Length: 93
Image 1 (tube, rainbow, N blue to C red):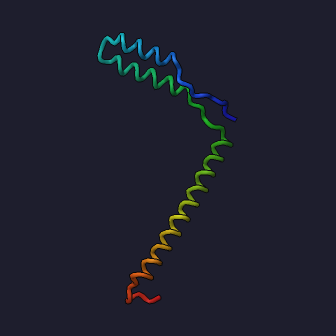
Image 2 (spheres, helix red, strand yellow):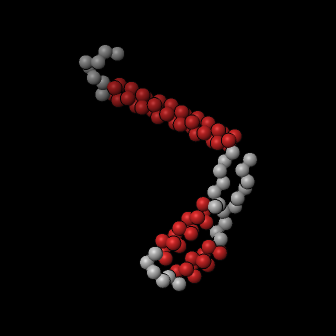
Image 3 (tube, rainbow, N blue to C red):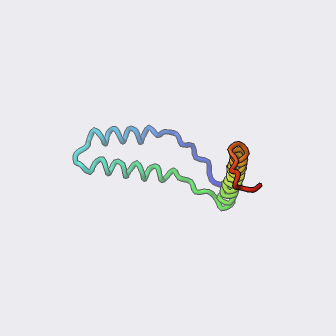
């Protein structure tokens, strides 16, 4: 199972960003600060285990199938209602 990581705002990152902004020397300092912050955030990423990944995938697929059935049912229902109210006399049925 993946380890639990609490995503608390780090005061060190904020302090470093403020000090880097105050020491900005050239036009590329902002880009370097951004890249350092991106790398810091990427270190917090935890990849799921294979079991978790399969579980999450199945949950998403089941949800998508349920939503497709719901939307299809509403579509067929509304189209039947519209055909009943404003029926086309050339269509048999």
